[in-house]
Image (cartoon, rainbow, N blue to C red):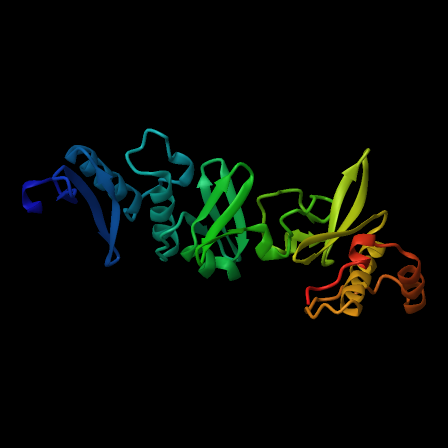
Length: 268
């Protein structure tokens, strides 16, 4: 059936009988699908463009891509990476010696450590505004959460990118400033405070505190109160090494937590 069509073009039909054309190319024994087109000439142009990119003497780069190209930008990245690095990846990734770029668009490029290559070669990154996420086991997983950054974290307060580049997720570039359970940074009247909540049947507010260490200890105290009131639920306590044991005990004994939490009793 393909012999009546230009090289690299194959006719196909949709379930409703509508004809369309698939374009593909074989390179280094790898059969690569280039996309589907309503016109066989467009499909052939895709094949020819891919051939130009993959040729041994090609000087075509990622920056040569134009919106008018018959190939998608994603396919453009895939082909150039395969040509330059000898590794075929289905996602728009370009591999460097110690890290790789993930191209969401010509002007939106994420950077990751080489250790993450397997994960992102099999998980497609999507973007909503400035939020990046993947679908993992049927759930949306935020990219920052894979690196210990909480969904509600405040940049420069709970975490920071050391080089100032919020698209650089290499581990050496990420610094987590707030590692405590139940502690959330909020801003009131140009001042950062620390709100603490704990999950029982839904979230209970513990309190709002002026420093993060007190907030972390307040969470631990809330856990103790719940256990003393008969709740049998496992919580991970905050490990607080910023103060001495005697300072911890003094803060613990003096801080106040929500009366509603103090009065909580599990259902019997």
